[in-house]
Image (cartoon, rainbow, N blue to C red):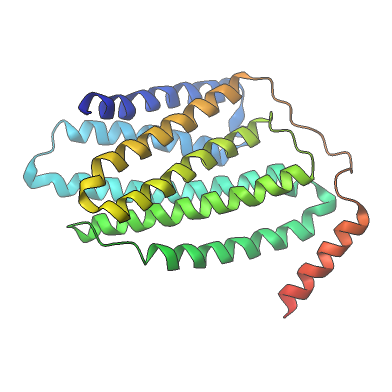
Length: 251
């Protein structure tokens, strides 16, 4: 188990380094700057934490915990930035639907934030340190928002016939896979308590490993981002959904 944990900690970040290098060569920072910033931050955070583990002592373990928690907070904010970037790139770039989808995006985000706050508050208190409990709540809330918003993206992608061979949707697929496994890990941790910490840690690291592999595959595949040709939903359907959303938000 120790070897597996070291593998899942080291190898995904080595692969993430490849993602950063290939992204630079393909100028992905121009089309998906938030995702590129997220990948670079994750790599830097890993290098910092890996270095700290070589010098940390039992009396200074709190330094590592603070670095881990602060990194989780910054990572969560960057992930939300990536979500907006994906919605803007994959959906809001469809100009004929921009108004209605922007309203729906804001409405769905507000609902998911409230749902994540309510649900994460019901998690069982299994940590001995309040800071670690805060980290668990933050991680659960972020995964719930990610999974929910990516479901919204997926639904509109199907309706608009958006290709899942594009790099933007590949990034979404990687995040969605990781978020779903993260939610399953949170459920296991809540149900089994402290005895599940090692297993949950392995699940979360494996989820990140899978997402990085997905990103690498999509980076090396030809990008097939379809140009908007005005097709997708009929004009009457667009007007119907605009009227429904305006009616809902006006109440």
